[in-house]
Length: 346
Image 1: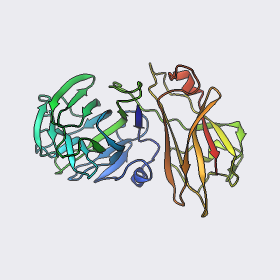
Image 2 (image 1 turned 90 degrees about the vertical axis):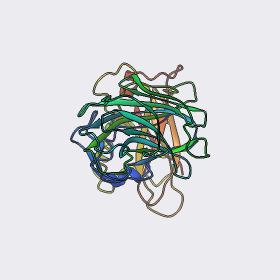
Image 3 (image 1 turned 135 degrees about the horizontal axis):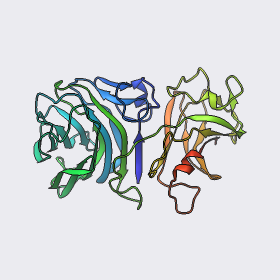
């Protein structure tokens, strides 16, 4: 089941937005770079740093899951155990398992932190410099666990055994760009996905994929929410970098709903694994402020409810399956026809 996707395009260049709903921490020397994104306009970048990057909650203790990301480096580290691709933490933020980039371009799987015991290695130069590799990991965190790391679809690291460095037999968060010294150059991540191994859909390696970010580009007949200016509802919320109170939609009446058309996919993919709807919202006064937010597909709305705070926050609704069709399979044409669905519930 799909838990998270991120193309890093909808934050603009403001890294503070990463912690306004998406990630628990920003990390050290992190930027939202427009220099070498793999897909879209931005990627997540860490420059030379001796500190971890963003930390993503897994939504609770999780024993088995799979995740993937586009990963690019422009220099190899000069110290083994200094730079990592990812690190898994338990509920107490103690390291369980780490994937490290070594000086010879190999990937080293280590129990615990980046300096932990190496339990498996890919062999030298599995990562090329300035190449957009796609790295996927399927892991079970347990004293009798397993881990497989694929690079560009090929299994490069495999291990069966103890993948839990603490007494907790699970992970609670994923750290991107873990680092203990500043050797090496820039490191980029893009096209991130995270799935658990339940639900019968999106419960295994998804393969090399891209995350496309689509913005509203037209109104519909359903537009109850008030516009802060102008005649077009979509123009209030179509910025790639949100401008918060510069222009916006608002509602003071429960039951009011607005739906907006979305831009079409820039290219037609072979398959669509899922859709995640994102809204940035706040309430302006004390009291109840609840919205339902999601999408409408082929006349069927699917949304989740969110209680708003006074401060702006990003809210998310993840969908493995298309609510508008019986078999649930997302098709590119269905994505092209999607509408955002926004309802003031209370």
